[in-house]
Image (cartoon, rainbow over all chains, first blue to last red; front, side, top):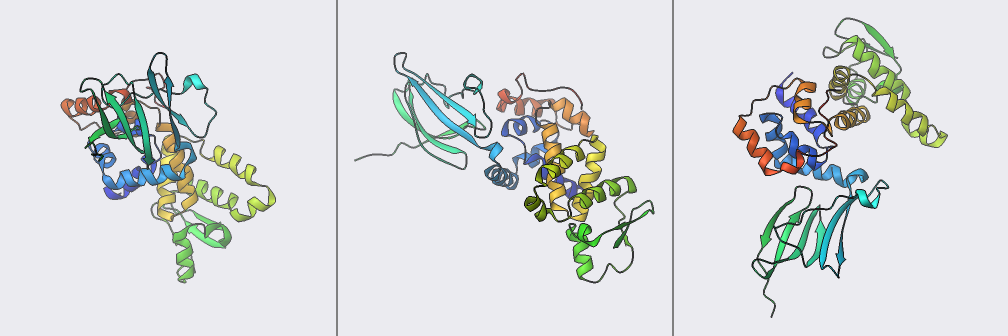
Length: 143
Length: 159
């Protein structure tokens, strides 16, 4: 069987997996790593997730004003998950979150502001909660 | 009726309404290439029997919704994918070759469900994959997302 044919089938199986599994399975072999890293595969995965209600998640955050603690959670859309079982997400950036605001979400990406204690300023981030990757965006100047 | 022949030379007769769920065979019939036996050099008889079982059950899928047979079909599908890895892969290969979309969806989803919580070691063993990454490459992948490698749900068993 030619290799590309098998890769096709492999991609069809892997595009149904959660991101967490995929990040782990990059360790299976070179072929798996290459496939999972491919832009085309990522798009297939995204399109599959969009049409699959089991892959959809709520993102919500909670403020406990007395302790000044922000927590951010990700909860599956489909199943009745108990509140205490909903995993808390790590904040992007290593900061003690005292402020956070989600601006918008699109295709699983989020634009969020967090307060960076160390730099004592707000940071605008483009964040992918599924992979936990984020990049700092340039802060817009308001006049 | 349409005649199919497996690679171990066994012939099977299947109703046209069932067999045209295969895009490949449907095209052959439309092109007038299915007058005699259709040889399937990639599929053995054991796998072909499974595929035909699926096709026969799924004739007139659209009607199932009207007659309330949806639950019955769902139950059949659940039972159908209850098979060993190797058998599942043979059916996936056959479904891919014959281009049977629904069967491909069902079997690939079942494969994904089985892999989802597995450890890297378990996946390699289940699929007989030789690790060709160096230790450094492997460590780098783990360092990028250590949280994906830890957790109570990760299952190291092979099955």
